[in-house]
Length: 193
Image (cartoon, rainbow, N blue to C red):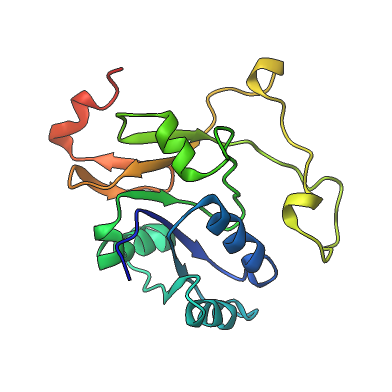
């Protein structure tokens, strides 16, 4: 198998009903590999992920939780994997987040191409409600939940958290849930435009 260009890393717990849609969504966006760590699942999540791994759609691991909690442990373990070390771009996302790209053909490659010369692409969050639903329905998450906060230009909240697609490199001290953390000696140049 050739080296992946774009790798998505996530941690999950009891996401069974949503896994197929989430994985398919991100594969269509163009992620070459999806690395999943799970924590104490009781709903069949691990079995679904094992089958998806058998079919070549994900790489599945059970999380060994250490210092820093569930997410940091998963990211620390993922960073040691050869597939992650060899990747050109890394994205850390959660199972309840669906990356939505608005350039080109709506794929990760289009986003990278639209932002030449950068190492980190910040992607703002958009918060969605339960759209008045109190019972799970057997339909796609992306079709059920559409009620969301207004865009900033229409009066929505600004300066929300972001997720980050970032170029792999040794200049990161660690990966974070929202952005990579540069080594202290490199931090001074991070926010220059």
